[in-house]
View (cartoon, rainbow, N blue to C red):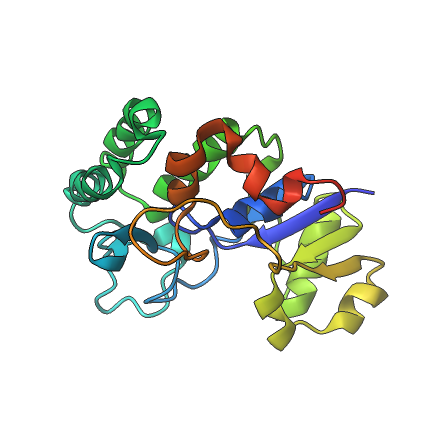
Length: 234
C-alpha cells in the first residue's frame, strides 16, 4: 500500500511537517494552489533572547491576489543574510550550532540567489530531509493532472501517484469530504500531532511550534529521537 501526503510548501517548518514527510512513500508539494498571506508559506518561528520571533521572506504580493505559491517571487534577496544573522545571534550557544553552521549558512547562500519562494522552500525541505535520513520521494502537484473540486483533486492526486492511502493534516478536517476518499478507494487518515516529547531549549519556556532548526541545533543527529515518525508505531 503506497502512502501519500499532500501539503503546501512551508519555509523551514516545524518537526511535525517533517514527520508527515517521513510517514509516507511520496510527499506532494501542493504549490500550484493560491498563495495565502500571513501563513506558513514564507515564514516560520524561532526562539530568541526576546521571545518567539517570526523569520519572514519578503515576497511580492501587491495586486497579486490570486497568484499561486509557485508563482510567488522574492522581493529583496537580502532576506537570506538577515535570517542567517538572526539565527546565528540566537542559536550560537546551542550544543550543535558550530557543527551545523557551515551547512546551514551555505543553504542560506544558495537560497539568497533564488527568485521563487517554492524553490527556496524545496531547497530547505530536501536538505533537512537528507540530514534526518528521510528518504521519502518529494514531488510537485504540477507534475500531475489536477481534477476539479477541492477533495476530488486530492483523491485524484493520490491515485495518480499510485497511492491507496492518504495522510492528511488535521486542519483539513474542516473541508475534506471523507466520502470522496471512500468512493475513490483511498484510505484516509489524519495526522496526530499530540504527544511530542520535550528537549532542552534555549530562551525560556519550551515551545513545540518553532522551526525544526531549533531541534537540530539542540540535538544534532539525535533529533529523530524527539520526532514521532522515527519511533515504533508512530
